[in-house]
Amino acid sequence: MNGYIVNLNDVGRYVAEDIRPLIKEYTFALEEELVHRIQDGPKTGRTYRRSAIKRRRKGQRVVTGYTFHRASAPGESPATDYGILVNSIKARFPSQYEGEVFIAANYADILETELQRPFVTPAIEEVTKGR
Image 1: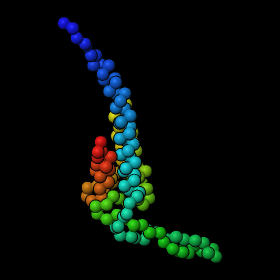
Image 2 (image 1 turned 90 degrees about the vertical axis):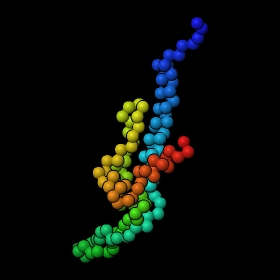
Image 3 (image 1 turned 60 degrees about the horizontal axis):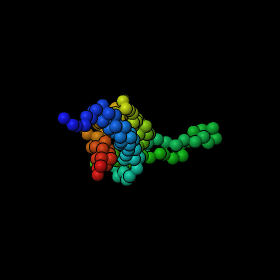
Image 4 (image 1 turned 180 degrees about the vertical axis):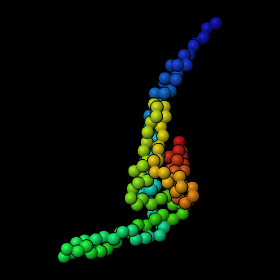
């Protein structure tokens, strides 16, 4: 019997070498897309006064203006305000064959589902479309 024996361990090593860069590419692309969806793009929700701007005049603190925040409307990605959500998004690699994007802000799932501010699902769809 003539033939060729393929050692599957060798095949696995070659596949692993090819897949590691793809895992990193997709993981970092998803992290970037999540941040982009929160920070950029039009937000059309209500605008509300957030805090007073105070300055010292003649030894007293005087309100000279206010800061405002425009929220997102239902169906839009959340609008960034203090940056807590954006700063909690981190790519990490538990092993050389795994990549994950972790969102540490405990209210991320509430924004996505209950408050109808989708950003995770559309980001995944954007990163994976056409690939």
